[in-house]
Image: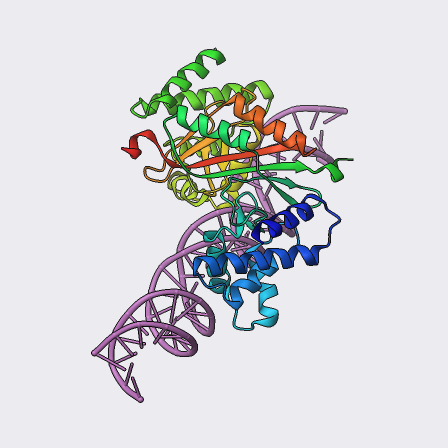
Length: 165
Length: 165
DNA sequence: GGCCCGCTGTTATGTTGTATCATTTGCTTA
DNA sequence: TAAGCAAATGATACAACATAACAGCGGGCC
């Protein structure tokens, strides 16, 4: 079941012209399943925030999430959003894009991985890629420096294939 | 001359217990030489900001720079600092550490390179490393995605060799 | 002199993120 | 059932990071 969801999502993410409704639904279903497995609460607010982040494949700012959330949840304030984002990051359901101070749905939720991001400055989309060779090279470099890795931020900015034409 | 400076600095940067006064002096001398070559102005404000960033091997926040700068330059305001930082980044004399919203002197100024950063969460120091293999792996990953790279952010957080003991 | 250009001064504001304490909710346990 | 507890949310205030916009100044150039 989880495997199926993963593959479905992966396929969608790989193509820009995809059924994004299905993309969101898949991500939410997977999130629900994961949280259920782990015994943590994907509360309505958290689920709504996750859905907002998944509205597109562009990283979304926290205050943009707040604006969206406030449409259905008048009491929403910055801490409401940041708590939900922190939870979602902690559960590996979204990533923070440090170079944009923005947040992006994780296309590999539930699968241990290190992501890299390709961020198009033209259309704003960010593609999450998982390249084990790159990850290994990074570990090797850290090891040479006797550095204990806890977190990796790899963000490549430029032009996506579509926008480079 | 430039080569000598580079090597001197590199040696210093590689050891934590180094003569940091010399480290700063070297960086400033190199910066002056580079700006002179390029016909751009390393004004007193810019040079002071560069010196402040080089005060340690820890990334420094813009407002920390501002506080320091204001000690000798009462008129300093946020734009003063951000303009200087932008200039220094543009000339490749400092780097911005995206995951910390902070700035770090570039140990390889004047040499075309892509840096990676090893940032210790314990002591706060950031080591700049240049690993061509890692860089190549990154380019290869981007190429596979038909992505045109313009900027790379590679920041590894964890524990440095000293702090991991 | 008159012009332009690069740099800095100055005021105000925009954007991103946290601290802190109060309240609610649902579960446990006596 | 009531007391107690933990997790989540509400609410207010503020801290930290960054930029917009316009004014003034000084040096080089015709």
